[in-house]
Length: 313
Image (cartoon, rainbow, N blue to C red):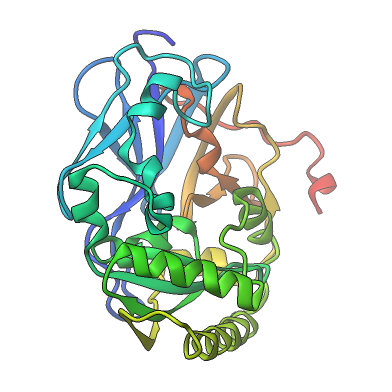
């Protein structure tokens, strides 16, 4: 990495949840780590511009998290700015990361006191559906109830249970996966590809509603207490609407692991941007999640428009 480069931490949707349809909620940003000092956020709201070039190959460590309570945590940056060896972390930061222990807590795994306090807050079980109709079951803490689904890029989602703590909700998540076959993960690349040709909204809503009803029926047979079955729809941020609606658009034609890129963000769904490139009326889906843990240099850069645009159609 160079002294002028920023390390990309990813796309985050902070702020208050969308309360009603047509409301944005949150504040989508691309979060960057400068060579020194505090993290910097760049707005990804509709009409914003983003220009950058890749400063180096490979991925670099994003540090680790220490959790002190339900609402207090610290993001510790990697002191060595080391290359990532496991996902987006070096070996040292992976070992020190409290969040890696979350998924074994409900199986009796030991966790630090601060993380235990976080896990003992109210949690939510949801069913999320993406642009292709692919769906998953997942969990969210009470503090991140809305934002987690916004960051994942759900097109439609419903909450199906409110659990008293993180242990119960993960027991329910595993049970639902076994009983209904719902996955706990949908690949980021699949979500982005689906947005180039999304299914109509009513179809996706019907898929999600049917799966949510199936999950609620399964929860009614659960042999564990500490939760309530609920019916509540997640409200998608309004700025995602243009990207989720069926339209003529294309996958971004350049790899994000090298080169220079620049475009205007017309809409955002999770980490996926609907990008307008100078010199063409075509619109492209850019998976900005692929930038995470990569170093970039900001500037007045522009993406190259394919020489034969007809090949896109």
